[in-house]
Length: 401
Ligand code: C2E
Ligand code: MG
Ligand code: MG
Image (tube, rainbow, N blue to C red; front, side, top):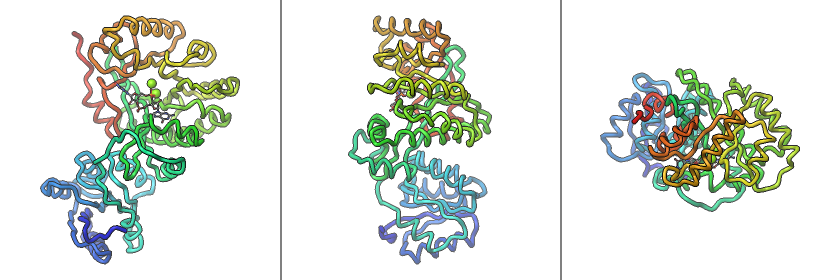
């Protein structure tokens, strides 16, 4: 355990007695640099005045003025601490959501302690603190890891869904989001799926990952709907998941248990290079479709058997790969491929989405070609789920020229 004497710890708690108890227990554990605040607003002012991040924040959730959830989101966005620990009498499911949110900001989460605070719980919580700079290496490009690291990461809930909006070309309306996983790996920053999805497939862990992402996505769909934003979501599914015939029932049950409807969810499938058991895969896809899930063919045009797949699988959406969208305003060949793909999709009654829209010129071109939905950095980068409602409120579609 890191010596707490060198750590600056901020205790945020509105209840005087409980705040004093926390400070006393931390002193017993050897902490010397202690700060205190009685609500989120006061704590935020203190942190901003201080000008440098504290090591650990021990925070209550239910507080007047500014509650702990809002406070932690400010701490995350403004990088005001390295780690947080939540102390609360709240239900465990709320604590889990807050933990997930804090991780999505790149904060180290030391855990949730239920009230009343005990020396035993506090010791266990503080022992997990690692004095790294949480933001220094955010978005690392490549890192070494083993199947055990991935397994542990799943257990420790280090895989977090980010969401990228999908908007209508015609009306600008936000119609959905795509869930994209990020690995918040302690000590290594945030790792892109491009570096670990293959490993997950080989380690047989991609189905549990899909379930984690689908669960997080359903949680957010409900939270957004409660705030008045009823949208749909897409989740990426590796073809490897479809080798297990029980997957259709499992995904359906998971969505139902989360109190969502499979019709709100589209599963995006990318063609695999590996030859699969075609009969088995078609069986699973047909059953997923029957249960109400939408099915999207992702990265269309990059695989080798797209046309054959289209005729066999009950797809509902076609996503034009970003490699064709890129430079389409200047590349005649890309434009032709897009035109042909859109024409095919129309004839098969599939919704069309262009991914990787990065510029106004690409937006204008795809819109004029009749593509239905746009997704890409021109609209928004993938973001943590809690940011979606605020983003939708602020979003304005590009004006007609
Ligand atoms: P994808 O499903 O085709 O997702 C689109 C990728 O393009 C995402 O990369 C997204 O961040 C990126 N992107 C979006 N707009 C733009 C843009 O305008 N310009 C550029 N250059 N890139 C853009 P990301 O998040 O790194 O994901 C990469 C791939 O990893 C995904 O490609 C998907 O195949 C896979 N993946 C992501 N999350 C999951 C997951 O939960 N499960 C599985 N099985 N695969 C996943
Ligand atoms: Mg996708
Ligand atoms: Mg794609």
